[in-house]
Picture 1: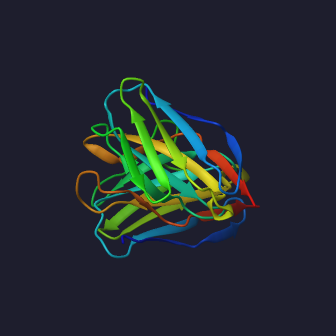
Picture 2 (picture 1 turned 90 degrees about the vertical axis):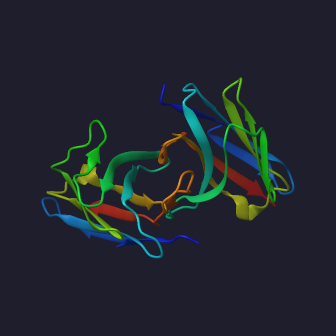
Picture 3 (picture 1 turned 60 degrees about the vertical axis):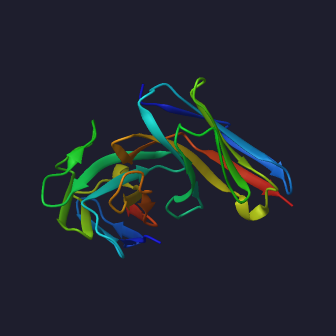
Length: 116
Length: 113
């Protein structure tokens, strides 16, 4: 089955630093990947749609300069949290689906970011 | 219009019982309704999905019931097991954008032996 790999699984960083999270589709190509954010005991909130070879599309209220997305190849999208603050601490999850209508969306195992 | 409402927020079921989680939506343009299971510290995993042209879909112990006129759908877990203890999310998407999901608020299921 389709596998989405996310790295790192956990990261702790200091305020003001930047953190990069990678999302890879291991056995399929994905022209589109999605980045979600999840607070404890809450639902998944879509942050942005990552488009291979073009700019990401951000959801309303998500700062594009804070959350930089790069989708440089058909199997890799990266999310960089810039100048991180404690309020950016959260669980970040990426997802992708193989091409085709009604092709299921597969999720990575998430990255727990803690900003101290 | 874009919301998917999910209930209950939490559910406690005895082993062997039936777990039922309900979702409702407003937007009739939604065309694809998956259910995801999430364990703590992990990403969601697809359980089962349905389209509005069928009223029921069953895969093993998991069944989706879909009521198009009421704009409601539900997940039934038969013979619930402690290993089913997880958070369940319903979701919806549009026909030509089925990978852009709108999630319900989630239901935390606990199955006790």
